[in-house]
Picture 1 (cartoon, rainbow, N blue to C red):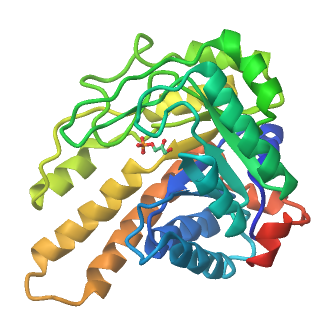
Picture 2: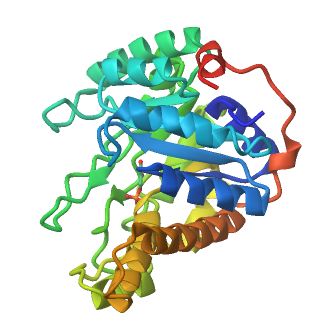
Length: 332
Ligand code: 13P
């Protein structure tokens, strides 16, 4: 079974009253960590892949390796998802490479400036029509989720406007909707533990009632655990103090209707912290296997813990075999 669409995974999550974590993976070792965590906890999993950010030689080479890896986990329902597709062409490449879900991020223009509502709606509708013809699910974005810049500052957040939700969903046909509620991507998020003035979970509640058949997605959900930051810093990193989204807020968001929780930075912190520690305490080693393996294990443990918190653990065996989208079947 292995590959499933985002629509199927999130419909299952709605029936079971849980959310599915979308874990960013930038190479096959990180993907293996997430898949092992899913196998260990009997969870469905969303592998979230950004275009143009892998250490492999090319996206297509990496994506093809992912298909081979996923084939080794026949009991794990896996959504292979393009995270933040910046334009229709990138989404087309992912569909052609057998992804079962694509996100088109129409909230930003190519130059990083916020796109208008009509512009966002038009590009999302174009991608959704094409992807749906291939049986692939689509996620769009309402509002703009902020982002960390490399200097530690944060890019602008534009909160989702509930008044636009119904029109956006009706005009695009998206399966899932990322709603900007005050979170931001990256390793530099909040200067203090976030409360209701920062995280607008009320928006989730309002939008969930307005578009009940569309699954809501919370981006920027890493918690940035202090022990992981300290581990990285002890072995050479210089990460400033920063707070992410507390686990209790994620659990609360699930009760309000969130069905997909995106987190990548926590995996990177866990992976890189273990790699740094291994290199720092094993100064004569030059073989990558021990430190890469330490990174994979640290990430696997963290992802398995999150799968239990999100409630997806124990639900892989609920899935019935389903017909795959044509493109995904071709690349199996
Ligand atoms: P973090 O940056 O908080 O890990 O969130 C990742 C994300 O939302 C990817 O779309």
